[in-house]
Structure formats: structure tokens, C-alpha cells
Image (tube, rainbow, N blue to C red; front, side, top):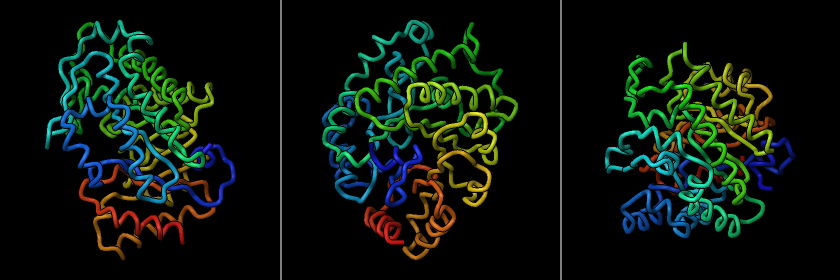
Length: 335
């Protein structure tokens, strides 16, 4: 079953499990070697063998309890026919949104386009030790729309009325994405994933008046689907600050990943009936070793004797020294 799934399901395990968001990525020299030979990021994600190899790189290097499949949340708009490019030093840039493609999308066409992703999961699961979990993931509807509609991510005063969606309500587009994402989740689990993480990375952009419609409700519908299908799930509504409590009470996920702006003691006191994951600032791993350990100890002490998954409040940074990660994991294991 795997340590992460055991923890989320409330089963007793020998120690608190640990993994890290973006543990397969640019900070690893072995990843950079593969990436240098594969400049097109989408094509790399669609290379089942290489995707699996990258997924397993951190498992071979570190004492981790889970792998997370190497892919990207933007494989969904790609599969829906939207152009997706990853520009160096700029990040993802998407082409114009073709509403006809979105509305006409069906399970067969969508699944076929992402079949290499599902094959990568199958390959990885067969190579991964049984005691280790395999996590798959999706981007929540709102976060996908931030990219698909090219919403300015630095806009803290977002005016939803200005979003350019011709002859279509935002709610209709979200509901269509929920159906597609549920298909994507089921396909990943059928291929061998144990747990799904739902990244709402841009939830912090949503005005308070709209957060239920654009964040809580879509996440809740996806979690409801997961629970109906007995799929272990973790939500990560990054940037919503103390609304985490309201989110947790509304959505009722199996697990919730807190970001580094959330005080761990507040999370322990206010996020009930859920397994808490993460919180550690990735920048802590850029500090001197003693300072890194001091910050990590705060989380370890706070969540002692509590269902918890040791992780970060965001993904590992490219400039992270892999040896620092080794040190952190050893400290955590021996605490």
C-alpha cells in the first residue's frame, strides 16, 4: 500500500513518512543531464521511459517513502488541444484557448493523448518497492484556468469580470474541467498510483467573495469523486492563509498540505479530521545546516504523535544542494 497512503488512511506505521514536492527536478545533476538532451518539456513528459527514470531518481538517492510521477499539471490543457510551451527563464506560456476543443473533449480522446503519462506510472509502479507509495497529481480547476486564460499571477486585485471567456460562464468551464480531471485521476490510479495530490497553486489570487465558487467547491467535488472511488487524496490550496480552516471544513480531504505562511501550531489546532502534510519553507534548505535543522525541528516537534507527512510548503528550489536534503532526511529519521 505504501507509507503515505497508510498514514492518510489512519493505519499505524513505524515512522512518520517523508517525501518532497519537486523531489524529481532541476536540483539533481542526474535530472539536469537528461533535461539537457531533451529540450522540449512536453515531449519529455510524454516519454514514458524517461519520465519513469526521472521519477525514480530521488528514490535511488534519498531515503524517501514515496515517489511522485514526473509530469506537469499543464498536461491537461495540452491534452485538451491548447498549445503549451515552457520558455526558459519565463515558465509556461499557453496559446489561445479554443472553447470548442474544451467542450468537445471526451474520455477517449483525452485519455489517448495522455496514454504515455499513464504508461510511465505503470512502469514506475512495477519498479518501485511495494512499501513505497506512488503519488500522482492534478492541478485544481482554478489553477489550470490561471494558465489557460493567461491570468496575471501578480494581480492581487483580480477582477473576474474582465476575464475573456466568450459566451461562456466561468462556472461552466470549471465544471467541464472537473469532469476531465476526474477522468485523469482515475486513469492515473488505474495505472498504479496510490495517492492523488490536488494542487491549487494559485488559490491565493482568488478574491474572498469568490473563493467558495472557484476554490472550495471545485476541490470538494473532486475530493467527493476520490472518496467515492476510494482514492486517497491530498489538497494543497496554496496562499489562502487562515482560510485553510474554512477550506478543510468545506472540502473534507484525506490530507491537506500547508504552505510556509501557515504556522504549524495553528494548523495543528485548527485543521481537524485530516492528515497534515508539509509546511517547511523550501528556502530553509538554502540556509546554513544548523539554521535549516532549527526550522525543521519546529515542524517535527509540533506534529509529534500526530498524523503527519513531512514535506515542504512548496516545491524544492533548483538551487537546493542535494546533500542538504540528505542531511535533513537523516535528521528527521533519527529525531
